[in-house]
Each structure stands twice: as structure tokens, then as C-alpha cells.
Image 1 (tube, one colour):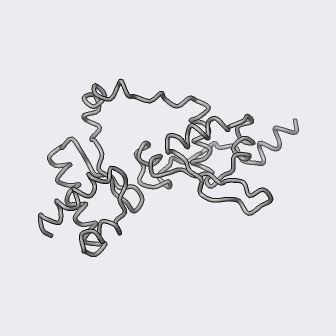
Image 2: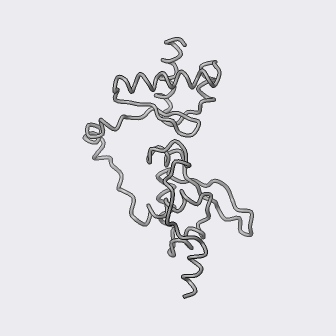
Amino acid sequence: MTEKLKNAAEAILFSCGEPVSTVEIAEALGVSNRLAVDIIEALQAEYDKERRGVKIIKLADSYQLCSREDYFEFIRNVTEPRRRQALTAPTLETLSIIAYNQPITRSRIEFIRGVDCTASIAKLSERGLIDEVGRMDTPGKPILYGTTDEFLRCFGLSDISELPELSEAPQQEDFLKNSEE
């Protein structure tokens, strides 16, 4: 693999600022998908060995250039004035429900939470953590929600399968049983 290809892959990741698929990188470099992965992994190894200020993370079948956690305090000094307000507990609860039950409708989320979730869904969508992933094939065609690559990036996951197991998650039968009492 040539230094020029590594530099070109680095430039692609830097310029895009968001996840770039392996297929896109391979096509841009004019190489096979396997060679594109090898190039990105070589860059990752260099960045890690040198403890650079940036690193490359894998998100599903894509890669993204981002800042290394070690330098968070320095970055915060610059970005603190622009910092967004943290997500509220109800919004985080809504996000958890979506993450573990996707694709899911707003009415199902509200059934699980027991309250209106319109504001939480709007906030999560605005932040790019969830998105519409389709429509249910039932009367009214309700919107189905799922998490995004931004969600994966924010929570340091490569894939949704890396979510921790819910060992004590209540089942639908438990909700129905409790609502009858």
C-alpha cells in the first residue's frame, strides 16, 4: 500500500466530517474493499501508536475521523461556550426505548413510558440521534423510529448489537398485567 493512498484516505475522512462507508473509500481510491479496510486500519494503528489528537473509529461498515478522548479537556475549553444542553432524563429514557426496540412507533414508545413523547422524539431527531426508518404497514401508516450513526458515535458503539443486555427489562405481558391491577 502506498503512502499516497493512506494520505488520500486520511483526506477523505477529514473532509467528510461524518462516517464514510468502506465502499465509498474503496471507490474513491480505486482499490478493493479489502485494501481500503487495510489502509484505514493502518492509519488507525499509526494514530494509536503516536497517540495523535485524532483517531479513526468504525461505525458499522463506515469509518469516521474524530478527536481522541485524552484531549477532551482541551477541546472543552474551546467548545464549552457552544455546548448544547444535556438530554433530560425523559429524553434519555425515550432514546433507550428506541435503541432497544427499534424500529418502533411513537405510540409504542408512549405505551412503554406511559406519557406523551412528542417533545422527546423531536429533540432526539433534532440532535440526529434518531431518524424515521420507515412506516408500519397498518392503518394510518405510523412512522417507525430507529437510531442513527450519530447515536452510535455518541455512545462509542460500532453497531447496535454492542448495546448492553437488558437483564431485567419488563416484557409486554408485565405491562399488561400491571395495567389490569
